[in-house]
Length: 270
Image (cartoon, rainbow, N blue to C red; front, side):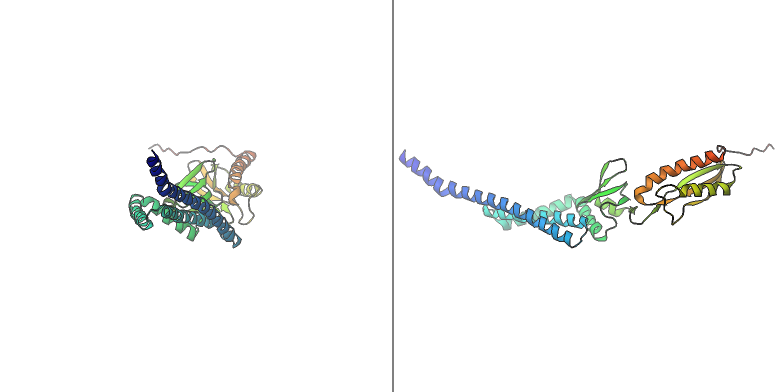
């Protein structure tokens, strides 16, 4: 009995306690390392922000730095536990090759994300149309870009799909045109209607003075003369100007007493 207790005590002393201390040491390294990584990421973010760097690029660098430091911390913890880090590095390399082949789409999204950050066709807060979606850019991530649409939907689009598509940035210029149509009936004085519409549209709030609103003949069809009505405004006022211009077109035509456009066809008897 004493011999068994002696063996147990010897086993605990020579194996259990050293392993326990090793586990505690690895746990301490993980906790302290994670805390240090958070401090480093926060310091990096403050430094880059103080230098006036773009917030999108700051977020991108912060995410990449965090992932790399976590991998190094994991290697250090495994080394403390006695795992051969050289073998672990080889495993990571082999896994990287396998994952790269299996997740080629993700890698393409990552590469496209790098180009989006470097070339900056748009920034966070811009209104864009790309990859089959239109909305305000909320985040340019490592693999995908997040948009918020006009009807308050959250759309996540892969960076590669955006980069491979035509990108329309509605916020890059100071103003944009609002294209609308005004159908006039046969017999309506076109010049008079154009003058009335131009004067009324120019009074709509948030319509810029330069360039002045455009009202011109677009085409002649079976209903009469079709006018294009194009005021200009800042992107943030687009829908307000869009709806008010439509109401203005209706009000001008009603006040002037213009008849409702009706299709006309000439029929000849042979």
